[in-house]
Image (cartoon, rainbow, N blue to C red; front, side, top):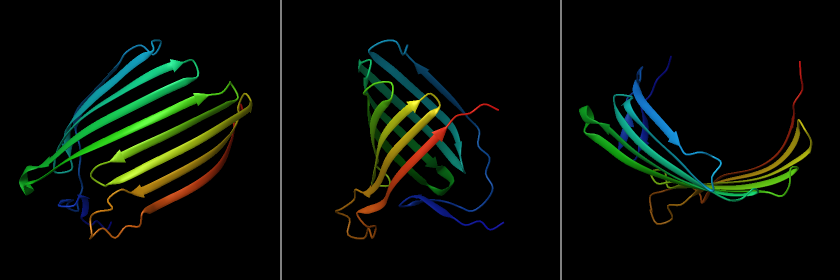
Amino acid sequence: MFWEDFYLAEDVYIPAGNYAFSGIQGFANSPRTTKLVGMGGFEAGQFYDGTRVSFQFDPELNLSSSFQLTAGYQYDHVNFPTRNQTFINNIGKLKLTYMVDTKISMSAFVQYNEIDKIIITNYRLRYNPRDGNDFYLVLNDMRNSNKTHSTDKRPPFINQTVLLKYTHTFRL
């Protein structure tokens, strides 16, 4: 097998090799039957030849039976003491879901990744003509948000896709 080093952040790289991870994680959430739902979690443990500690918090506001607003924040602290390398990443996200009725729903999702300076957006329209059949129209967009850094050679639009998807559930 061919292995090569890769970068996680501008000055933080992972040397080529085999790695095994161990760690601990925990998650908790409040009942989903309330207007305000809280979800949170943590992870800690080995990460390649270093350690990682992550926390996340995802509150959800159920404005009505058909309208939901979800936010999210994730904090990652990664440390490689033998190489004196460390980085912190913050990820923020926002999701809006609206169900017109049992057949039509729409959602919009936006995520910002601080270390990669990337904004990801996703828009989805779902149509359910009958149980077990779904049509989706999905628009995905990935953008470079670092417009001030002169050495960044990425274009403003990194990736844009339009998907038309059909799913059919059947019994065997």
